[in-house]
Image 1 (cartoon, helix red, strand yellow):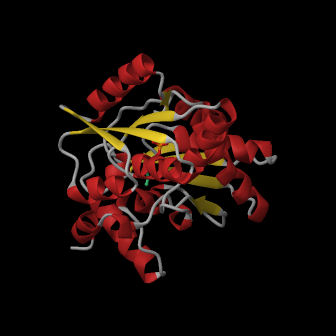
Image 2: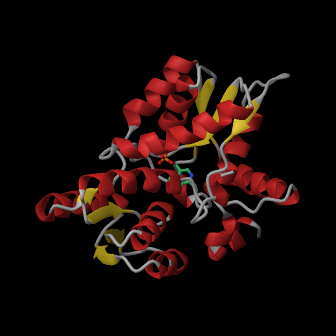
Amino acid sequence: MEQFNLTGSHKDRESEAIIRYALAKGVRSLAIASTGNAAISLAAYCLMHQLECHVFISAGVSRDRLLQIKAFRPVIHTVEGDYKDAIETCNVEAEKNGFLNCNPGARFEKIVGDSEIGKEIASELRPNSVVCPSNNGTLIYGVWLGLKEAGLQPRMIAAVAPKTNFAEGIAGTLLLEGSKLQECIGLSGGASVTVEDGEIRNAARLLMKDGFIVEGAAAAGIAALSHLDIKHETVCCVITGSGLKFPNSLRNILA
Ligand SMILES: Cc1ncc(COP(=O)(O)O)c(C=O)c1O
C-alpha cells in the first residue's frame, strides 16, 4: 500500500534512498526526468532537505501533474518531445552541470529503496507470487531483491500496459532497467502480463469498493490477477500509487 507514503507513491522509497546517498556524499543538486510520481516525490524530498531539484518534463505534461510537481518548487526544464527526449536531455544536463542523475537505470539507490517493500512483504506474508505494475523495471527488481534478502523466492509477475490511456505511470516501453526486469521474472519463474484499459478500469472500481482509490498503474497489478493461474495461493500485489493525486485521470478511469 505504497499510496500511504509521503507523496502517495512507491517513488518515495526510491527518493528516500537517493536522498540518504546525496546527503552522505555532500551532493547539493539532483536531476530527474519524469512527468509524474518520480518527479513529485524527488522534488518533495529535496525541498525537505534543502537540496536543489531539477525536473525535466516533456512539453505535453498534464496540468494535474505539473501543478503537483510545481508544489514542491523544483527548477523545471521543459523539453520538446516525449519522455525519452526528457530522459536524454536530463542525462546530458546532469553530466554537464554535475547534478546527481536520478533517472531509472542511473542510480542503484532506487532499487535499494524499493527493496524495502520486498522486506516488508516478507515480514508479514509468505507469498507464492508477487505482482508489480512495471514499466522500467526498477520497482519489480528492487522488490525481488528485498524478498530474496529476506529468504523468500516467490514468482515475480510484472503487470504491464504499454498501450494504456489510463495507467500513465506504466505507459510505453522504455524499459530503462529491462535486463533486470527480465532477470527477476526469469529466475523466479514469473511472467509478464499485459493488461488492457477495460481491465484496469474494473480493477480500480473493485479497489474503490474495498476502500482504496488508486491510480491506473496501481490498479494494473490487480487487473493482472485474472490472467494468472492461481489456486489456493498467497499472492501479494504492490499497490503503487494513490488515485487522488491525478483527478483528471481518475475521472476518466471511473467514467
Ligand atoms: C504508480 C506507478 N506504478 C508502477 C510504476 C512502474 O515502476 P518501474 O518504472 O520501476 O517499473 C510507476 C513508474 O513510474 C508508477 O508511477
